[in-house]
Length: 75
Length: 200
Image 1 (cartoon, rainbow over the protein chains, first blue to last red):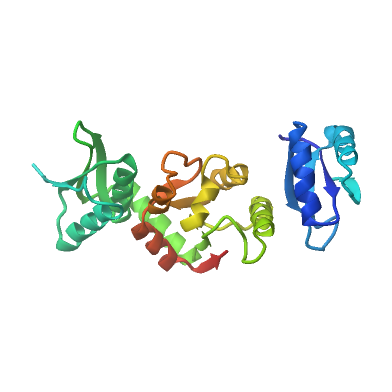
Image 2 (tube, each protein chain N blue to C red):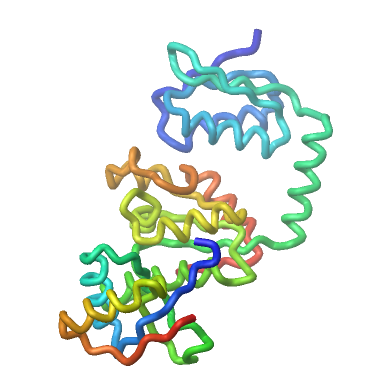
């Protein structure tokens, strides 16, 4: 994955993060739960990391499943 | 002809303890016959840690580890220097005893341990050794959510020791996907040698 550009989905809670991971993986989109990167927030939190190229697809999946999210940040 | 000791019926870590008692008695030339390759490897590692030569021979009867006199060759000297450096550096040892980080909500604990291992792969400082025992061994087998991170850590030189007794208890002997099967003798040595012990 050298040179891959990632983005993260910021969510309101760990439960939202777990649900997001489940529905995103079910759509065959590669993703990983990781701690919120320091440059985004110093708060302890969990975000869903994915390849930036999948951003549109992922956002659609999240919205279609009615999952509340904060924002998407390219890292 | 060196004496051959049959340890095929002995559970882990008895073959290693057998080798230790022979070394303590001053024996330098003997063979130990064990039933599994993991056990043979553990005996080999132990012999090397004591600077003895050791070779593995697969026979119809099992795995025979032929142990010889202390080897004064350069390689042993290098190992000795490496061990001394390790001792000076005080290795960081991390213990993982369950699939969760902390006690409380189980789902949260599972997310936290995944986050922890991802973070470890991104940090400048890594543990020298991570020891997995009891429920922690489930993180090292096929289907574990942190296999990718564990492989990355291992590739970067982190030693992953997995309790063989625990794998057997959970029926996971054939499912190990990362790290090496270890025994209580090595685990206890690793914990006692630790300069910093991080219990998760």
